[in-house]
Image (cartoon, rainbow, N blue to C red; front, side, top):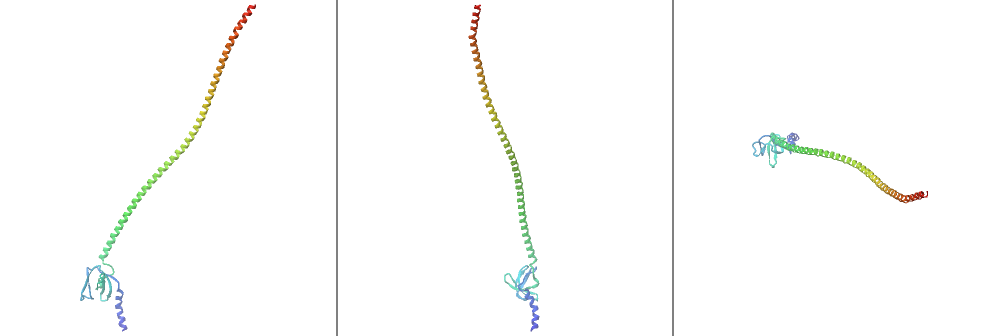
Length: 221
């Protein structure tokens, strides 16, 4: 009895090891799922290439009991099962990945183009800002020079005003002195005139007497 069990265990171990694993129909166009192991059993379903199957058990005779996604159980030849999806499905998946990658690449290219455009715009704005800063700096220098010149002009204007005020003051003094001199000249001429008049009157009074005295003297001789 123990010997019989030891002989059966190696046969059962493949069945146990593959139970619950997932397998795929190989790249054949169609395979038959039968109700039992062998062509004498009826066909339960035709499986197309790439169909996904769940392996329930595997028989060393070359058959595997599988279950479809729709819940249909049956037996298929194990050699038609593969650990990977069919090449057609893998190619389709790869093509889809390529399409997705191309879409991502196109999106990244668009983003890169937008970034490049924004970078170009930023460079243009930066250049414009630099030019504006340079222009404002030049205007500031001009304003500083103008302000400096304005201070100098203000100082010169103040000095000229002070000189003008001094000149006006000197002119007023000259006018006052001139008026005083005119008054003095007028007084001098008045005094001279008065003196001449007085001298004339005095001579007018003295000369007749001198003549009269001379006549008297001559008469006495």
